[in-house]
Length: 172
Image (cartoon, one colour):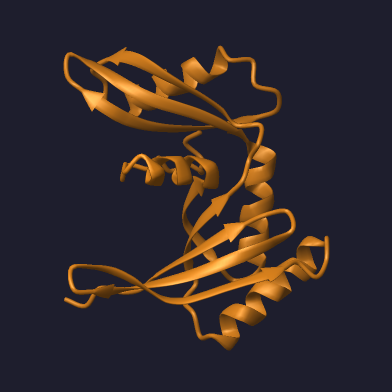
């Protein structure tokens, strides 16, 4: 079974970075990197810039997306052992108590599971996430997941491989 390459975008206010990873001897290696500044502040122009890059390099449409969100809030909480929809509802209730301004998009990750669940919970504003999703869709790209860049960097520095993905969709 052939493993496909993984494409990632790091989106910032001033520009973007791209990396393509390919399978190699039990791991992944960097195949291609690229970095550019946005040539416009308009979403449509930014989408055209990404679309031209994707088409010129014959890339697929699936990408994992990292972005910055300085207003993100984080906390670690404990819950009784929960799973599935019950865990999602508990996370949503916990985030609702934080007084986040704007419409919150919860992020969560189970850190430890024993008699009680230790869960790392974060929250970002839906507005910033909607902006990046709309830009990517206009560029012909499909985000397969979102991560916060700062969170991913901290976890990499700590040697953790458990980055929490943002749950973006109708269930929230």
